[in-house]
Length: 241
Figure 1 (cartoon, rainbow, N blue to C red):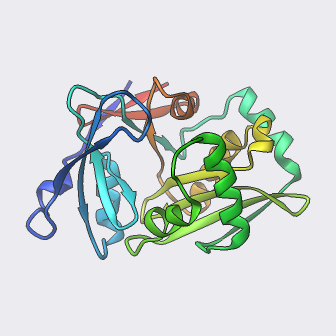
Figure 2: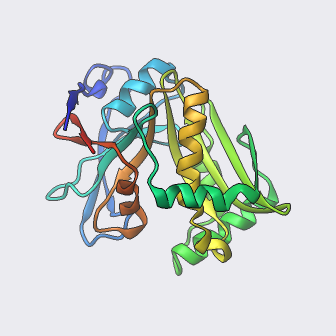
């Protein structure tokens, strides 16, 4: 294992935009209180956003946040080094099976087709919640902090998956991925990460940030299968081979 230490940039810009501690229900369904350490910004230079990502922060709309939950450290930031990541045999099989997909890369754009797909995904993944696709786009995806791209995956013209990704000077940050529940067995989430590592290399990015690895949550635990990866533990990025 190797480790690299980063300072928390929120301490150095608190006089510009104060960070606050905001308690909330755990967004990942764990039976405990969550606390967001967060602040809103109208703009962040790409280099500074890179520093926030390296310190374990995420973006939600124009808000930068990190989880500071009492008595819980389940949310562990995870990233891939674009030059060191090596896909497993199973991931290579997923890639081969996905050769029939048409992939489009473009700016963030809200369309009825995407909203309908995201609503189907949310209703399948989070039944009974009041989550709505339009709210995700307006409150979560759309921002003025970073250039944001959408990657669309189509099968015979049918939209089956969409990936939302932020681009900074040195990194790609995977913001969100949603897909058609009817195609769950195709492992589109795995293929999405595989494709993003290739896109990051083409954009000369050092890292692909995958958000949080949360071992007790199946929808977040799968990220650890991508190796080698690095986990941010007590301020150090520790490589796991």
